[in-house]
Image (cartoon, rainbow, N blue to C red; front, side):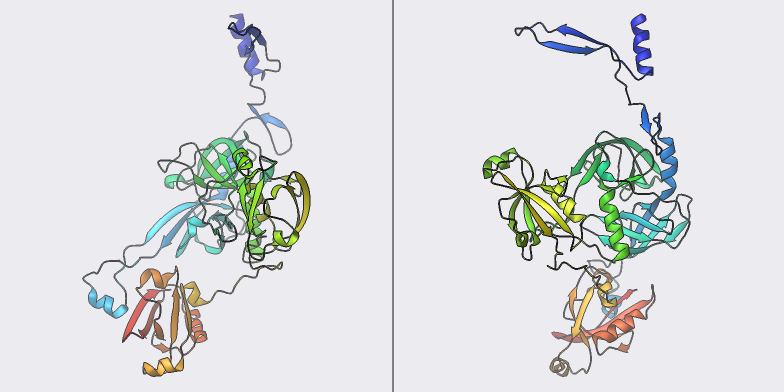
Length: 491
């Protein structure tokens, strides 16, 4: 009974003095000592430090109440797509140059309000390809959102609704987050609005190879995820990962699961990366990303043995791209980056993430291990275009926004086709024209809604004058099949 009382008292008081006992392990090797804990080592487990630095009992309710009003439900809608098989409506298809559409598709996710004037962060994959993005607030108010900008390399998107005085979350320094800290994940999994789950930070700097990559001249994707065991499921994408004072620590992005549902591993883009992306999109309209121009490989014990390296961690420089700022500064193949400024580099993920937080023109000091000797190399970062200046956002034309590119047509071609005006479609990308019609590249566009078009500029001006939802009919011919085709869709 006394022993039980001691255990109970130790647990309640946080085990200020843990009682220990030693016992000799009786085997063939005498003198092996095992330590047994007879108290309950609960010190600090039941407490947290609040925003004022005061130690208070562990409690999730305060953070949950603060965060839930700032997390929104996002529904992205893609309009009806054309069918791939012929329908009975051949007359309609022949006239409009398209097949009868299927029903619209819809997906959902989450977002985090980061500014009282309606700026919301979510994942790029939540809004990618959407014709309409609807946002529902915690209090059930709904809005149509504008996509301000996206960054596929980090899977982050910034959208905005026309409202003021909204509840929002502030960013905290994700670099200061520690493995083992309690965190909350807030989002809308399986359309279950405002769901809060709790867990800990399981790891930092995770690279799980889920983002698109451009391997020519090095990867452009930045994966340095915070891993958590807080339950994250489909629909949580774009939601908040917060520390226990309600500060935004990351944007929930992915899960690792054999079933597609929670199985213990969730991943969030760290807030320091998110805030940099957001600042760039608001200030410049496009992400400003510094670029070393190197091909890199994580160094471990096996790599160190194979390449005869003097270190067992870091980022190995395997090669250089054109316009490489690292090569210009004096870095060599075979160097191992071990530190940038005051930040240790243990892997290629560390290096990519650190450089990705800088803009073209920024200066960094890279420390490399070269055949056992550490050398510091100052580097001025360039952009992927090879310049050190700020990257300007391209003014997107109306036709490019619809997913196609056009050029002027040679007068001899027009004369051969017995027409006196038109522009040629040179490229069809991922846009409404490609999604909702069966137009082919090479189509010579002669009229938009029966208005003759004689130049690229005229096409742009006509499309600019059209309103969202207005029916657009693109008329024209092909060189190899000179009868008129009509392609219809809605703006």
